[in-house]
Length: 120
Image 1 (cartoon, one colour):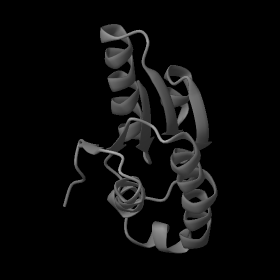
Image 2 (image 1 turned 30 degrees about the horizontal axis):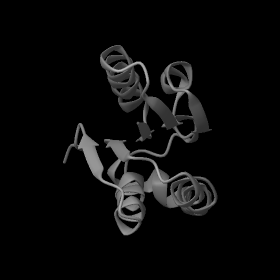
Image 3 (image 1 turned 90 degrees about the horizontal axis):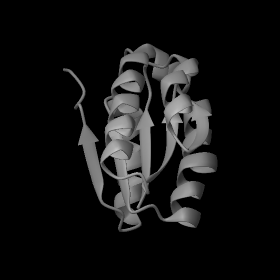
């Protein structure tokens, strides 16, 4: 099974990495590709981009990073989803970006799971 995970902040990165460890413990054949931070980079099989490093959380920070995040979405995420077609996509918190990841996966018929929904 091929799973794509996306976490955009430091706490989401930690939770996602723990999820990866649990998934691999229950099924060592699972392949994890991820966008996130240093913890996901260590635990995933294929790390695509350090999204945490951008630091785009809060309200204004993602607005300032709009074009960079849009580029990551189109050049990395959508390209990966279209070419690889993972079995599942798991998004962790980081609503402003992950809602677009979820939409792109949904449009390609890939099931999406939200692990740790964003806080209001």
